[in-house]
Length: 265
Image 1 (cartoon, rainbow, N blue to C red):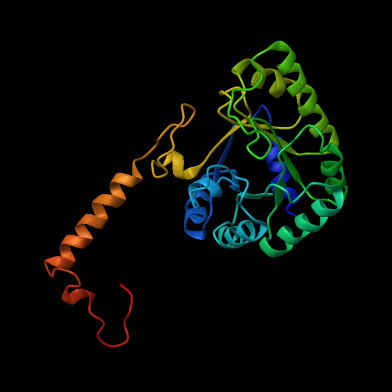
Image 2: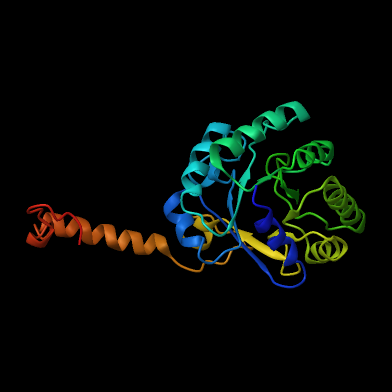
């Protein structure tokens, strides 16, 4: 575990906004690593890469395989890995599976979704010196129906209590997903650890998005996503040009031929 990287995230609380994005491969991670504070291998790969309707079918092997690739592209960012649904149902299975993920991926921290019951699991892992990022609000592993959380005062206070329990258990940060701005602000102001928002307003200490969404490649663009590029259009344009060049016998050109020992430009 990289304690320096964890401390750097903790230090940013109320001082500097924390920038986070997802990655599932070395090539993307290497680009993100230059600019972001945290790179997350999220179980969102279920939707983005495998076209599942939810995140429930992603396996530990899936997570480990993609995380091992992402690790190769990271040098400065905090590297966090999501635990899939069903891999941390109790303390024994959580410790076994988390240790396996850390061993196989070399990640800096683990993210667990909260079901308002697994505080003891977080506490147990932290005692083993494993940094944990919590996750409350809309939690895809435990919520079947999408809805904005914290819309009533009672629900906001319930979420605040849940967040405080996660902090008390030893988590170093917590994701707030799809909360009302008022509830996100309440929780962020009450916690000593950083909050990372997704669909939870600018009141959070940091923000995370699925990289494929913000690059305009996934086809999934809810209201809380801002598309910073339209890579789908750029890729389509490039593939069309490649196809045309082959059909017109413009590629490969003579400068693409391999003559002798020089293989790269």
